[in-house]
Image (cartoon, rainbow, N blue to C red; front, top):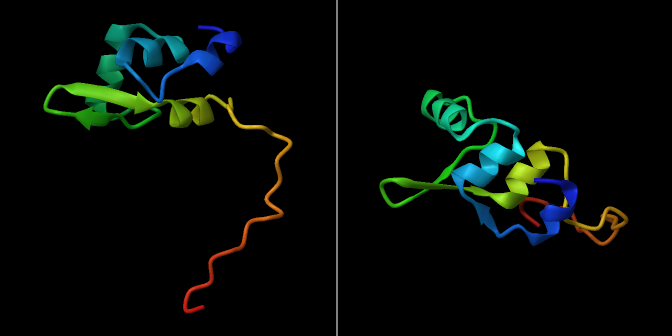
Length: 82
């Protein structure tokens, strides 16, 4: 996987794609998942399938699919009791 592939990624990634993004083998990825050492927590779909949210994977890798020129000037902070 290279940087040009990022824009074409689906909303969630399978184990093979996620392992490839982190530069490890699928077998090693499953060992990390089983031992709780996975850098991104999987989302379980049913009893056997796991997927990883693309946005979380990209964030951990320091990549982003959003426009970095956007600012938070229009964000109103939440105030409890307001």
